[in-house]
Length: 341
Image (cartoon, rainbow, N blue to C red):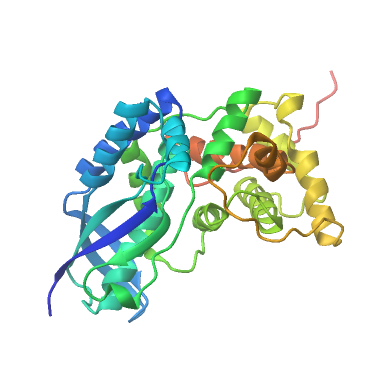
């Protein structure tokens, strides 16, 4: 059977949010990422046989980079370009990626190959948004090419990462950085993030939950609040913390004490308690609207601030672990009796 296959993923909403400075950085990151993935080894758990499959992955992002450069040239920023698209549908925000998957010791059935490509896309989304929050989204996607009709591509939004970045910038805490993409990807490799379809370790549980958060659109619902709260508790080991006070203290040891405006812990705790008790309003899924006026956007965004602040903390903790090449935190408490003089 053929051991190499090129899979095209069409992205009909490929342009993320971004001001002038962010636009330039996102384009530079995509250029770096395209060069990074040239016959690069990638190990994935193959659900077809329950074993690890070894692949080499190459990425052709030239069409997407060209679109982004055209958007920058005509409007300087992605934000302005997206507004122009909302007013005129002939202004394109769609593009594609081509992923070449070479099977080494792995099965070459279509399911195995498309599964490897899908896991790669998931990890690419996480890697780029940890290196530069808000830099990567795959929305309104579909596979194209041989056997593509048998599989559904997955959608992931950059909004949660971008909103967390804006929240951290607005409140001055926590500090979110721009990381080297290679450092992030190497950290994934050490954590074996692509090697298990069911996450076992704390780090991989948090990363898989990030993917689930990225699948949310516009309004963060009950599921998002629960996931973010759970991520924080897993990262700092406070799953038995009833009111998040202990969690707050541990986070403060790592990231510094939050200013009052950025202190999300009480707000997140109240939200989670309301969800547990069935006291929180349940909203129907919102219509995704690309040209909403300011009043509608404010209504859609209300009740999100606590989740955005908390997600910024999650991203900052993950960036801290990546920077220190660590896989978790260990807290200890010591006591020593003073001897009498």
